[in-house]
Image 1 (cartoon, rainbow, N blue to C red):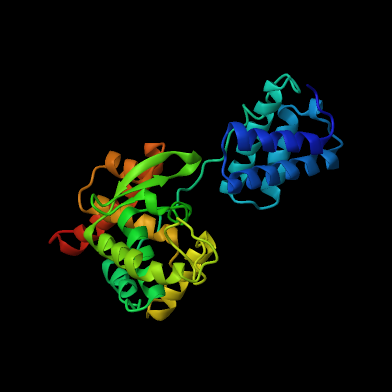
Image 2: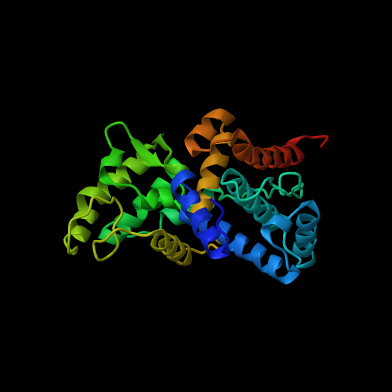
Length: 301
């Protein structure tokens, strides 16, 4: 099979990402955007696929740097194109992958932001627990922090994924990988209150019954965007001047566990990271905290 048109190549690559790689919609969109960017470069340079070699890949890399893109963005584009040419190589469209030998720029790994205890306390106190939406919002907050979930994971929870008797959640993470995650007593109380009180009220407004755990004010499934807006409104009710997003609660979950002595492998499993290197970034936070404690406490610091 040797498709000629770029639009056909894009369609086939999209199918490959969705079906064979089980990539998330966000990943598929990003890869296709990077591919379209590269096709524009090819058109501008008058290049065909069979013309792409190490020289043209370096030329493309130079153009990316000239556009003042961050090293993270450059790395992602190169990774996307490696995958694309790997696919073309497999399909016998090209004979080699010219992006394999192209070195990715070294990246600065940003230390993830997290919330301190007093900041969390402010958030936990803002919801009106006598109202259905307040009960829901408290349950979302306790679950995000108590189980360290991604926003996509909490939005995808169904009632059947929750076991209140053992305080565990069955979570579907990246690549549809499933894992069991425990949660604590605060989250259990918040979830129980919401499920047996607030959720029943919200469900009464729905046009059809749903098994999704978290509902919007019309009784339908709450979206990822809806969860972000809920958290933003919680912050606005407090005196906090910081930006809080769902992933920051996940960062806080991991940081607090490590600060209290949890081992890295356990935190990796709880977060659903496929690689330990993804979890190790949180050790920078704990090291920074230990240094501050030392400098503030040791007589000869």
